[in-house]
Image (cartoon, rainbow, N blue to C red; front, side):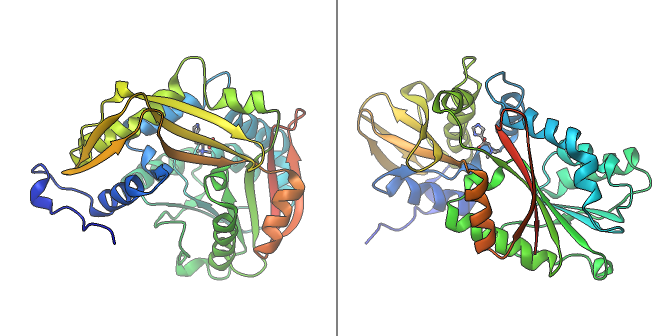
Length: 321
Ligand code: AVJ
């Protein structure tokens, strides 16, 4: 039996996101303490991630953009005319901007994102830069099946899921997510998806533990966010960033390591940390091309094409439902 959640009266006078609090308390009560990577992206976290994408060690973003630039015409040539392009978790529109100039036959762009405010401003800007494109943003959680606007019923659908975001999910969950995309898009759809590839451990380790310490700041910012939003008292200096590629599991693991034995309080609930004990904060799965093909096939997607960079660091796949 687990103890009940704290009453809100015990927490400082501010609006508390109950599901965030529940996730944090449950994660810190587990034998291997863990927090969900989805909570990295508050304002400061999103800004730090932007900085990560420009680090010399962090190859995924620039490599994927280079693939989209080099093979944009080929990618576009395989898509049906008059299609609606549906981006899952659009965030910034930097990636789709590389693809759009090649997709001259596109009818509509449908960015799906949870942040309504962000969606609206990005959609407006995109509409200015591509005046002939119809932009129909949908505010929704892309991890659940999404109902697309009615007027797109007859348009061929092309899904877009760049950034190797799928690497954050356990393989079974990643497969379920691909299945959910298939249901959202319907029979006959195409999916363009970016997948980071398995490579030399030293290259992977450096990409998640950069010399400038930006990834460390990104990881530690999660504790700052919990302090601020959930009334916790994490001492950020008492935790160290740790990131490594686990070759057996095929994933990067990020942790925050307690530098000493300590007690931390979150919304009135105490949590003990032994010296050296860790909070597991992120997984980033890496795939081989055949490995990702098998995962996609299990979710109902047939492999059509794959494009990679000359060093085989990253891959962009075209799949058909
Ligand atoms: C946004 C999930 C693709 O796993 O590479 C970068 C997040 N974490 N550095 C990744 C991240 C640490 C990133 N994804």
